[in-house]
Image 1 (tube, rainbow, N blue to C red):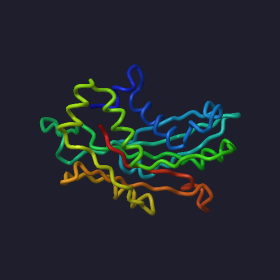
Image 2: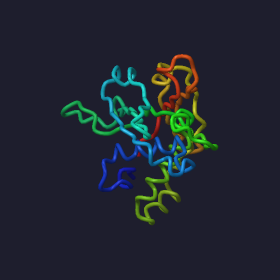
Image 3: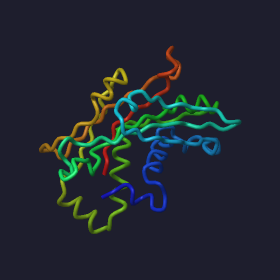
Image 4: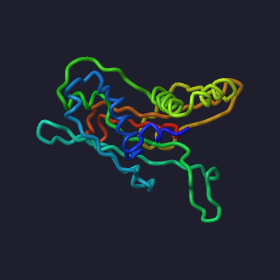
Amino acid sequence: MCIRDSFQGQDASQSWVDLLQRKVADFQQLGEQAYRVQIENQNKDSLLAFVGSQPQIKTQGDDIIINTYTRNIYSVFQGLDFSQLSPISTEHISVKLKNAKAIWNALKAQGTYQTYTCKDLNQLAINLALSSVPEKTRQRFEQYGTQFVLLDDKQASTGFTWVAGTLSKDVTSNGYEIQSTSLFTDPDMKIQKFAGMQYLSLIHI
């Protein structure tokens, strides 16, 4: 199963992050104002560069540009091509976005929005992946496969504890348990460099 199958003809990574940012900001409730938003993502291979990156909202006329950042996380052993000692598959992804409150404030939007967690977005990823496979395959997975059990997010207090917390997976009697670490900062916090963030650790299917 692969989320990329749901984004045929597009840059899969950018399209997935674009969807995540729009979901986190609850663009469905923004109506026409959602068309004023452009999302630009950068993937950081270096841990140091990723830790040092912070999403930003920039104004361009009446529109805004949101800069987001991602990093693919590889298992130490799983998915390694030992002939060249290079990772060939992603275990999960770390995503740095702007949260809904920050984006709605930038747009001066009125109304209410829903808050989405890593747990919600991991379920979205699973649903997209299942929707991209043949019906018989999906039915076999639901009948015979080990089912995903998504646990509530662990809340990090700083960017460093978020990076260290990442995402845990464990096969138990309940199924394939997954728990993500997330970080949320208020847009009105004093240190504006770190304000209005939503950091996510998400499964890669």
